Amino acid sequence: MLPLTEQIVLVTGGARGLGAAITRAFLAQGARVVIDYHTSQDAAEDLAAAHPGKAIAIRADVRDRAQVDGLVAEAADRFGGPITTVVNNALADFSFNGDARSHADQISYEEITAQFTGSVHGPLNVIQATLPGMVEAGFGRIVNIGTNLFQHPVVPYHDYTAAKAALLSLTRTFADDLGPQAITVNMVSGGLLLTTDASAATPEAVFEGIAAGTPLRAVTTPDQLADPVVFFASPWARGVTGQNLIVDGGLVKG
Image (cartoon, rainbow, N blue to C red; front, side, top):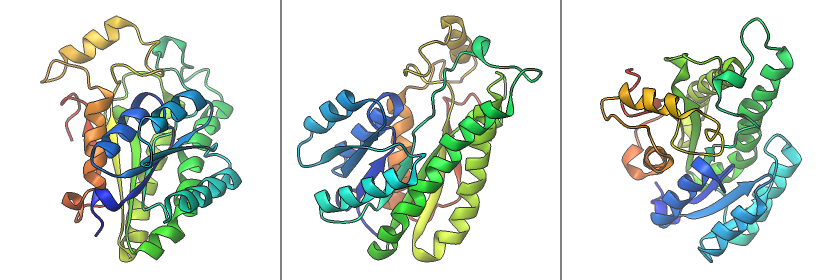
């Protein structure tokens, strides 16, 4: 059992939005963090520079296994040990604007496969690339980022929701497969967040409607979603695996 202060955490897409909030949350608990980025070099390097010795920024497109392998090797070299904890947060290009998404009579299979490549193939690459290091350490924590749209499909994000549903399935089957090696696999599923680059295109009226429908009368923030991600990596979650925790202010039940 590794305390957070001894964990080396990889946050994919860790430089902006929710990813940056997750990165900061782990750093606040004393973990060392590998900030994976694809196009956000300046943001990633600025975030790493603000935490010298505790955070490093490495570019890798998670959809490319060779790039992921390179990131894992570089991280181990620079931090002197294997990645023990993974947060699969990276999201292929997507805008959370229902008016701009393809409806059931229009969506193409290419749109769906694009999201599968980012939300399933990417995490698969990352998990398989980091698995040997986790086995070596005798400890592993994998946290996948999902969505509450499984339970509350009120917008036509067909491609995004289908891909995240597949990732939830992998979360549960991988938990069973990897559990004997002291590796847990869980998912944290939020709703629309206030505010990230992906949700910047969302009309204000949508945010207001979501807030009105929650017991907390508020839209969840990236910082609030980051907290349970850290929990799943912490010693307090040592007996938890294969779970999907919804963090949306109580909008969706169960």
